[in-house]
Length: 257
Image (cartoon, helix red, strand yellow):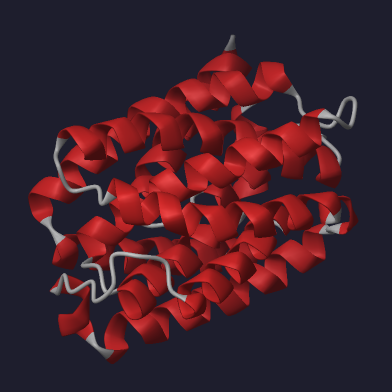
């Protein structure tokens, strides 16, 4: 019962963080590794919570009328194509690769958030259709997302604001819809490899992710881009502390269990 409760409660945090920012899956990965799951199983099972939170968050953003569904769907096409390719090689990922790749992404995100803060609040989409530049950028993000998943949201945020021209609020809305579509493809690929996805763990964690994502969506829409920016900064700092074992999340989880 303690494990089930921990899966749901940690999912609440992960769903909230991933909806407002990204990187919450670092918590999921630490939890799954503490449970003794192999890295390839962790990488596959992690997609279940992402899928569930993306569904609940997309529906909520749509109800609040901040989701540019048409443009997000177009961008999801190259992202999904890339994710399918990345999923086929994801079994080669090691914990060390995940750690240092995520660190690089976090440092890039810090620079992005403070380089041009006014751009985060500006909503200026110049082309409602899919451009070649957008196709290539989102295709590469898809490859990364299919390969590792952790930190993909940061890339989607940078691309949504910097390449497409959305505000940070609309970028987050599009981000979850894009992740929903390409994660479906990733889950289908992983499910073909028997035993890689632990559905019992993933679905329980996903319940919490769904609730957390709805709460995060409602708060993000109400508070706006500046609030989301500082949540992102807090998430980045927390994640770096975990990466360098300043906060030993595995030990904390182990003591709870």
